[in-house]
Amino acid sequence: MKVALTGASGFLGSHVLQALRTRSALQLVTAARGPLPDARSQPGARHVRFDLGTIDPTQAFDQLGQPDVLIHLAWSGLPNYKSAQHLEQQLPQQYAFLSGLVSAGLRSMTCTGTCFEYGMHSGQLSEEMPTQPANPYGIAKDALHRRLDLLRTESPFALNWARLFYMYGEGQPPSSLYSQFMAAGLRGEASFGMSGGEQLRDFLPVTRVAELLVALALDAPGAGTVNICSGQPISVRALVEEWRRERGWRIALDLGRYPYPDYEPMAFWGSSARLQRLLSR
Image (tube, rainbow, N blue to C red):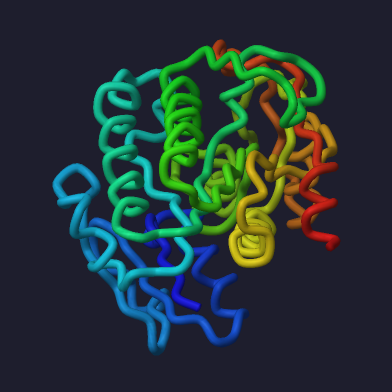
């Protein structure tokens, strides 16, 4: 089986690449705007450098080695969820790229969506709920999903739309909660400033997210919309306290130093029932 992975140099992409290494009999092509670090290179895999904003969509399928399966992670402009570039630049570029691949012969893709597609709904979020995105990133992802669904009626292909919730782990950008906390602990700081920490979220280690994406792409093609989540809410404060306990640190949590984000509800998490059914087959 030929598999292409876009966004291979990113935080999630590097872990998806590791998860793909556990699968046998794969011909892998990785794609990113720059080179892959040597540590991420895989024997027998081929790496392609291209930018979705400049590549000719009609040639992309051949450049990716005419894959049987695409795992599509590439998306610029994060973590600025409020940036207009998600709608003005990313949405048209992403659709042109993906529809060009389908026109050239791609028959199966797994694309990453976001829990922000659900908008300001509180509580447990299931795939059957209507989408009501409230920030440019969520609106752009939802619009791309809708356009791909419409494309399937004209040019049939297997589509998985994997809605990501929250993840953490090694290699996460420095601005993330996980990276900031780890840096503060390693510096031996006495306290760590954060929000009040009472918001409920759905967190998974990035290694687990990567495993689920690979399983979805290779073992459940055409599954449609699937939440990639734990199904269990946890407060941000409890999660940080868990990280602190695992490392035996005494760093105090300076709760309430920063305000809560205004682009998401105080309490929401995913339903993992559909994911569990798909992967237990």
